[in-house]
Image (cartoon, rainbow, N blue to C red; front, side, top):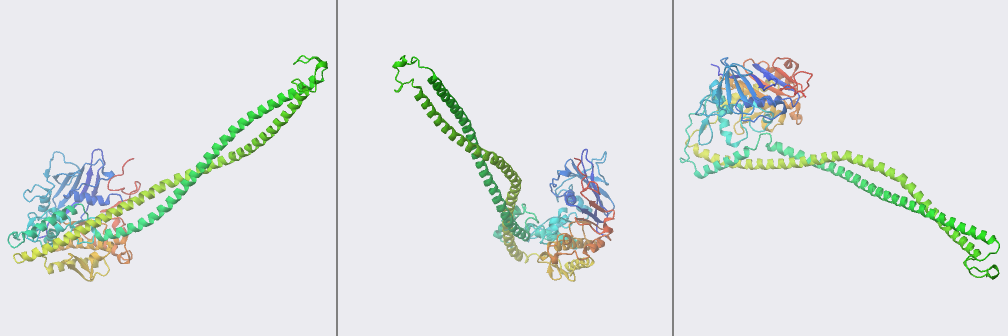
Length: 617
């Protein structure tokens, strides 16, 4: 009897006065490809959210105004149902049949969002029941404590994000040390169909050190507090180290460019200040010259007036001297009694001589004044020519400063961002070091515990035969994809990961890690179906072909091979399983023409703009 599975049929967002955003899925291969920032990865996030993910959903502008999500699913017995959830999260509504809107007159059934072993009225129990895994238990620690299997334990192995598909850790593990045991137990359940219900928990008093147990619990609490802040992609030590090296190089380059720009900016500022100072001095001096010229013009008028007065005195004296002798108008002396050779105010000859002498003196002063005015006029002309030029130079400098200022601000901002990012990476590496240290301590303590427990409880590790059969399934898959050097594949229980042709999967570049992670996930689905073991029945892979898009080096580059063509060709033959591929690069022409291929163009005039309809400006 074939194990029951699930098949996704549609994902639909609705909202008041909003055009529904819907995507339909077929059995077999479904491909979503196209431009970045069009909602491709958001589709995976939304499906994960609708399968019990806590969320919250990523807040993107396109989903504003949408308040409900509809996920249509079909089970193995051809019975269909629709899950409805608010975009803000919370509980689910269950409706029989496939719907893109709330059925009229049907209130549906309310399902809780959190898994509970005591209460069946929750999404996890409902979905587990659909695939015959309800009531299963998985081991959680070395004491053989068990807990109820949650549907979310399975989603971890079937819904693979872009960040996760590149990770260097085991595909079985989420990266949280406290979850390793139960994650491996879930993997074992999928490969064998046998859960851990038969395990008997070893009491802490029988063979376990209370001190060691207390230490383990304390370390688990610390690890949980750290891992709540961590994600697989952000806290990968190798990726962080590479990122730090790139940041250091970028900071050095940005710092050099910033120094050059600041030196250029400061030079322009200094030059502008010098011109401003010279311009102000020139304007002040030009003002002084104008004021002096006005005063000198007034002085020249005084000189002219004095010369005219003296000329009048001279002419009057000469005229009076030409008259016949008369009685002196000053002293009244008769002509015969006047002493013309003595000093007297009435001595016209002396007066005329004095007036002539004064005129000569004033004329000399006026000539000197004219020379000074001429020099000032020449100086004023120089300033009249220089000041407009300084104004032009100042305006040009202002324009250059205005042009350079935003660039300098951007450079300063970029430099500050890089420094801040470097500090963040240092902090993340510090967290990784602390987590690694705690994990090492925990593993040492757990090994000691397992040594004590092993005397009372048998091992729950997977048999080598089962793991070898699974590894052979992955090897056949890689060979079908024409993956280079896929002759020998086996599963390393210590690392809980694949070793391909003697090379660990985690030691390859991120592109190779992505395609081999895809092989692990697809191989798990095919193995479970071939062995009639439990599985969701579908997988979603985000960016499995990174080696084509972003190869890290020659060993990580598949662009010269036909792996992509064989990859799609192989999956296109599926008829009783479902896979959804999300990619940026275009698949082969034969795949793009399939009805289950969706192209997100980010172009309002060509194809589908994105998952959500384009926002009308």
